[in-house]
Length: 176
Ligand SMILES: Cc1cc2nc3c(=O)[nH]c(=O)nc-3n(C[C@H](O)[C@H](O)[C@H](O)COP(=O)(O)O)c2cc1C
Image 1 (cartoon, rainbow, N blue to C red):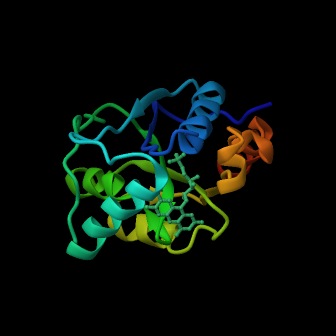
Image 2 (cartoon, protein in one colour; image 1 turned 120 degrees about the vertical axis):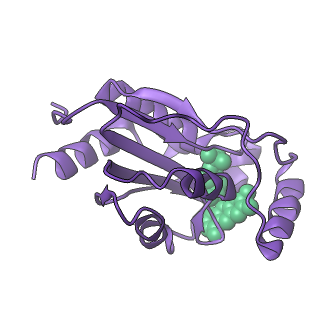
Image 3 (cartoon, protein in one colour; image 1 turned 90 degrees about the vertical axis):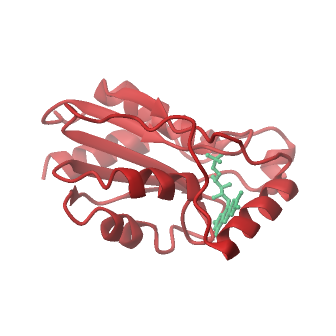
């Protein structure tokens, strides 16, 4: 049984790749919490394929640019915010950085989750905590996404992980 979540729940995330690892996990969380699913979208999306994405993101990273978002969701009225991102260079993706700069989630309970390509979550949790100093940040969920070989085969995050990982995490962070 999934834990009871105190308050109104939003599941906000950014997902870049065609495999949509982070979106998949976000959908699992929304299903098990009844939360409102909100996807962050860029005003001008990074290009695909993967090599072009890496090039464009690398340029913004080096220049310290946070890309503009198409939507800046209003989270007034939400108490619990699940915040999801792919890992980019050991931390959250740049569009998530844009969101957090505009909305540092003060006063909210924040449950961070991420997907990565095998390098682990890096500074993700520490960086979310730093970006949300006035939020109560719970322990993060880290999911290993697909690697390049699986990508070529058209397989996604479900190869290794299931909804059960989400259910166990929810029970851990809300029923302690
Ligand atoms: C620009 C960029 C940087 C990345 N940096 C890392 C990294 O530092 N460590 C890692 O394990 N995976 C890294 N990845 C892989 C993604 O974190 C991984 O594929 C993720 O599951 C993609 O989620 P998405 O499908 O929601 O976009 C990177 C991917 C991109 C596009």
